[in-house]
Length: 131
Image 1 (tube, helix red, strand yellow):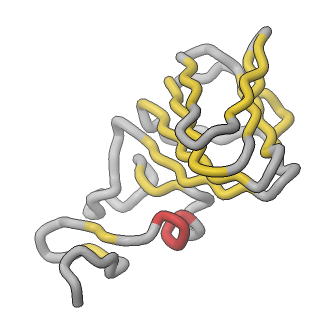
Image 2 (image 1 turned 45 degrees about the horizontal axis):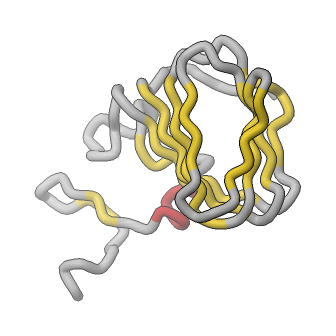
């Protein structure tokens, strides 16, 4: 096996190699955060990382309020809209991104089939979007 090839697991050195598309399907898109087993190198109290695959029209209309985290959302492919207070941001070129801070509510919509990478900091136990 090629040492650089994903093998889908953790080796004895504490290294996890996998595929974001496959691994994210196991945990609602989340690859790294407080919710992973503490023995897993993907466990983190400081940051959460999500690989989001969204069909066209997929949306979260309920605006997140009382956000406790800072967020970065990067467009990998597709066309993705993020609604922020007083502002609508359209990500349409690979690498387009938006960052918002604590206390900034948001919602989103995939205008085309889209893949986005989301980073939250910190990783907040018990955090869930209503509905």
